[in-house]
Length: 240
Image: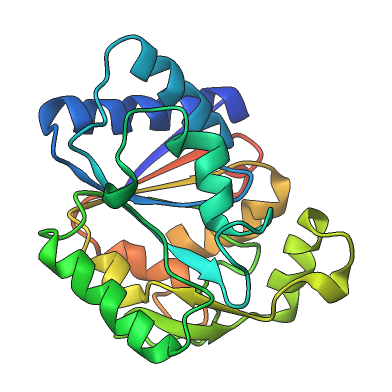
């Protein structure tokens, strides 16, 4: 496990964006696993700049970690909408190459199987980006999620719903379920980069890096991955 502690959010974003850019340059047909939320926003902004400087996304395939159940792709708080706003519309990636679970699928279990099969048929994820929740969840895999889990429908913890309420008009509007890549799905990625910023993530980062490997701390499973890098700012890394 490689731990990189940087000064601030901008430095974190630059470090991670350079890793993604290097992956694409070394393998133009890279398969990227992507995250949403506030942590990767700076990364996506920089990737837009790198695209303008010549980084080519035309052969890249992407798979997002998760999507809310019950939100259409057009909903302003859906993760498909987030990705279109912050990255997909800014670079030359084809719509058919960018994959986000369908939170409106009539058969959610079948959607999970379909998504898992799409990842497998792509050859697997080369580089997976992760954020981390204040309860150390990765994707939407909440504490207690089995390490052998694959893409599935998950019930969101109260702390996760509360954390995400800032993106909605009220707490009541926050979805209570999501489709999420499972922990096994994430661990199959060839390499993983987890980013975190702010003091509210310090306990989760400490538990993930220094604590025991346990399903009660989902991110702790990353200690078992052969190629994982944590990029954290000083506040998030203050307990390391």
